[in-house]
Length: 131
Image 1: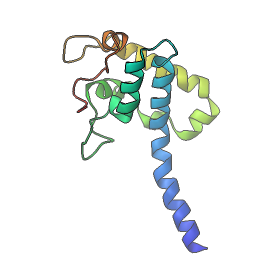
Image 2: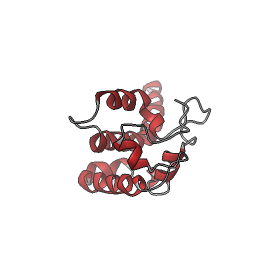
Image 3: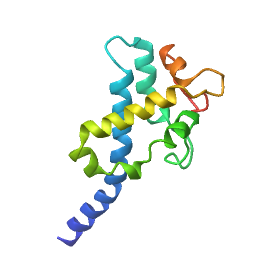
Image 4: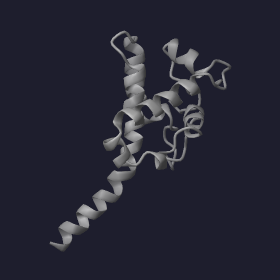
């Protein structure tokens, strides 16, 4: 019985922090991957997964954000989106995340294009994601 409680406690510790991050990814897909989206962009986005905002292969993946992830992190912090918030206010949480995506679209990538221009051109937003 003690082992079961220990295993469940450890699982809860690891599952709770990642919840908010997965919600950000789900909202990104809801906002940018529609039935009209270019198939190659859909494939590239799915392949990138977490690396839309993070750097592939970085030792501290959660903290190693690419340029797009750093821009979003200024507006979205998982501490402001606890698991309960998503359950109790799903529409409000989605609206806040979408608003941050729209605001970040106007910021420039290191290649001179805005993140929004890159996404509309079916390019992944970050140039430094390690993909």
